[in-house]
Image 1 (cartoon, rainbow, N blue to C red):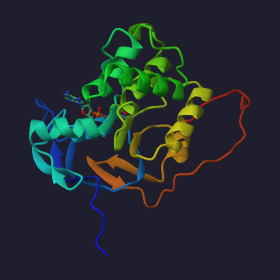
Image 2 (cartoon, protein in one colour):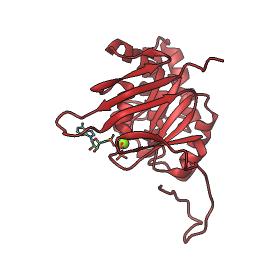
Image 3 (cartoon, protein in one colour):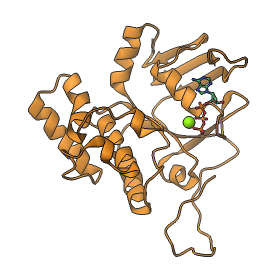
Length: 243
Ligand SMILES: Nc1ncnc2c1ncn2[C@@H]1O[C@H](COP(=O)(O)OP(=O)(O)OP(=O)(O)O)[C@@H](O)[C@H]1O
Ligand SMILES: [Mg+2]
């Protein structure tokens, strides 16, 4: 049987930021089919850089990127790819640029050819799903941190991407909202890669874990993603855990 064409493949990708002496990522190889992957790694290890390379926001000095079996190289190729991969930025302020929530969420569908009425309907449904009912006319820059995160996620989900790249999606979310996000992500069909320092969040949303260490991506075969219960002071208060 022929193996399925990978959704995404990086071959021997290396990247050095301009003006820096050392590579941030070095000879990275990675293949994704339809998995749900969690990506962990120390601050500054190159996780966000990895996402930016996939989206073509920065270009590697060497190596090749394939999406759905086709090499992605020119700006036109990357424009096409950006319509198909949903990228949630680590900082929501970098993602939201329209005055109102509806304009931001409708931007993607409109850009992909939906009529204004269709785009509005998709946007309202997506916002409702994320617990942001009646947020359409809210002023984007006045939203709270968590509301911004969810609105940014809505701008992506409204485009029904084939793959989601989520950079620290549970940051700023209260426990109930974080739980809702877990349920939403578990209910989606798409493959995803989630960067997070929140191991329990990853345990609930991902089947496989990767880490970036020494400028390379490694599959964590020895470590298993797992949830656990434990006892500690103030345990009755909602709280989150780091790695
Ligand atoms: N534009 C830039 N110019 C120079 N160096 C940069 C630039 N952007 C990021 N870096 C550096 O590249 C390294 C990787 O950064 P990156 O943002 O990918 O890390 P990260 O793993 O996402 O970290 P965090 O967990 O803190 O978000 C860091 O040392 C960072 O300082
Ligand atoms: Mg980062």
